[in-house]
Length: 120
Image (cartoon, rainbow, N blue to C red):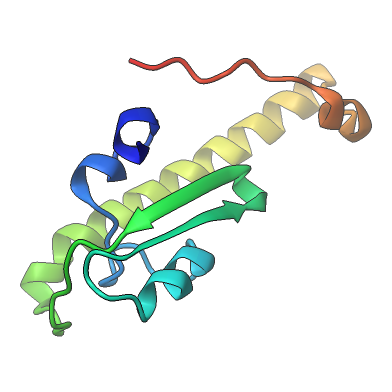
């Protein structure tokens, strides 16, 4: 059911807790699946700050190992690019808001109903 109805790509690739997705990103999922046996399902787990429900199934385990710098470099570069892009976008939006006088009404924002995600 999760594979059929999820909008997230991890449903097809599996959820990785080997370090590509570290504990700080989704600690509730990480902690819930950590002591499970292969084949066990955990969830549903609600991630409130993302307004997201997750059901996960442990498909397998790999023995963790330290990566060589050559192996880790592509992942490090991509992560740094993502962080830099996020930083640039946040600064750009702040500049736009200041320049054209946009403000956010936090109370009204809480009442905003967003449309359901569109499946592609």
